[in-house]
Length: 268
Image (tube, rainbow, N blue to C red; front, side, top):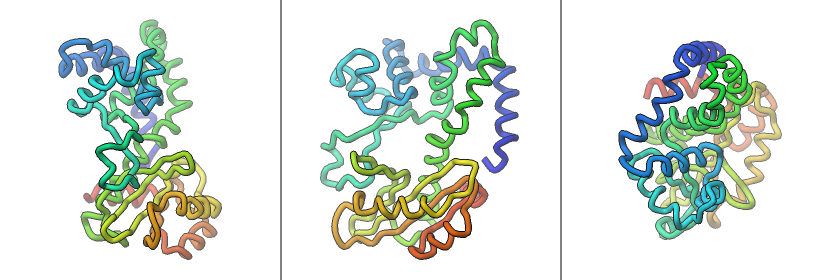
C-alpha cells in the first residue's frame, strides 16, 4: 500500500499472465466447500460483490425473496465466505434481534473476482486481457478505498486497542450506518460510555479541514445516548493539510497516514 504504483504494476503483470486461473479457480474454491447448489451460492456471492449488501437488496437482484436467501446466507457465514455485519452502535441487548445488517465477502480474492472478472467473462474468453485490465484499473482505486482500506483502518484500531494505545478501550469495532449518517470506523465501549469515530480517505490529495468538520458534525447522529465521551480518528492515504492537522488537534483526534498504518500493522 505504501507504493501503490508498484503494487498496481505487479498486479497487472500477474493478471495478464494468469487470466485463465483467475477465471476458473473461484469455482474450484467454492465447489470444494459447497457440495450442492453451487450455482445458487455463486449467484449470492456475485450479488454481494456487486454492491448488494442487505438481504432485501440481494434478493431483489436475484429475483427471490429475502426469506428464501436465509439458508444460503447462513451457510456462507458458517463457511467463512461472507460475514454479517451490524452497526457497531447497536446496543448489546439488540444485537441478536436486529434486522439492520449487511453482508460482505470476507475473502479478498473472491471480492476481486466477482467484482471484475465475472462481469467481464467474454473478455477473458477472447483473451482480451489488456482491455479488461484497462477497465479494472479505472475502478481499482475506488475498489481498494471502499473495501481493503476501510478494513485495514478498523484492524489498526483493534491493534492499538490490544496494545492499550487508544484513548478508550473498545468492546466492539466496526462501522455505523443509518438513514442519517454513515461512519467508516466506530469503536464502542458500552460500560464506560466511550466511542471513537473514524473517517477513511483513499483519495490522492491530502485531507482538508472540511473533512475534519464533517465527522464531528455527524457525532450527534451516531452517539447512542447522552453523556458519552467522543474521540475521533482520521485515516488518509495522502496525509493531511496543515489546516486539517490544526483543526484535528482541537479535538485531540488521531491522524493516521498510509505510512503509519502500514508500519503499525506490519509490526503487529
